[in-house]
Amino acid sequence: MDRLTEMEAFATVVDQGGFTDAGKKMGISKSAVSKHVSSLEVRLGARLLNRTTRRVSPTEIGLAYYDRARRVLNDAGEADALVTSMQSVPTGLLRISVATDFGVNHISPILGEFLSEFPDITVNMVLNNRHAELIGEGFDMAIRIGEMEDSTLRARKLAETSRRMVASPGYLEQYGRPQKIDDLNDHKLLHYSNQANSAVWKLTAPSGEKRQVRTTGWLTVNDGQSLLNAAVSGLGIAYLPSFLCADALEKGLVEEAIPGLPFETQGIYAVYPSGRFTQPKVRTFIDFLVHSFAKKTANNW
Image (cartoon, rainbow, N blue to C red; front, side):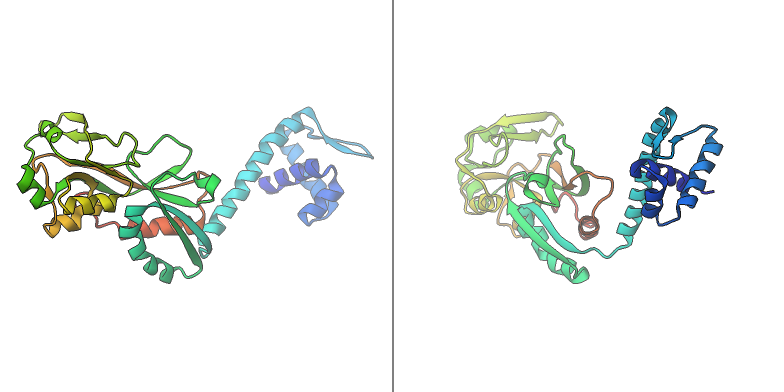
């Protein structure tokens, strides 16, 4: 007889407290359940159940075997559910938390293509500049940029971006171009208030030395696009991700403040609650993002 069926029959007898109810639960006859359990006991060479006219209960060995058997059966059930899930059409509401700048510039423009390809999914994208509590706030996933904090969340890398120190040509003409990191102390700097330690810029010197520069800010704001606008207007030097300022650099609206400075790279990640398997709607959207961002590089992002 099939080993898994024998195991299921035995575990169901323990769960239901008897052969009759176990048969009803499994959709087979009482005698069939009894044959499966007897076959299991013969194969194992041990008595797993105490049988009386009034009740059936597991022996000491049977109870120990039941604990392991139930785990195996649960894993088998989840394996079946995984296959079914992976073959099913993704459906349902997908709630996403995304940083405002990245969501506006790089998620919103491709959502139409995604929804056209998967019409049974609806999307609720919430733009914010904080790390939302996914489970507590009901999000299916989030897109985060930078170092991943230790957490129970699962993460998949989508792309990389680099941080660029930029200023307008007008600002550099008026105040001069800094030649080295220490020169930043004499310039007007623009800070992003929603980042931890926003007054500390992590930079790499041309020698490769890692520097943490505590700078005083002339303007602090909680929105990256506003910082870029301020830099374009000549208000100071901003330290921004490439995905936000690459277009302004290409158009000449801003320039590299210290051209010889190596770029700092950051990962862009999809994060979602851990579990035995990923919901089809989440897996589908992450796969779509990976494909959409495949040609992006850290320098133009």
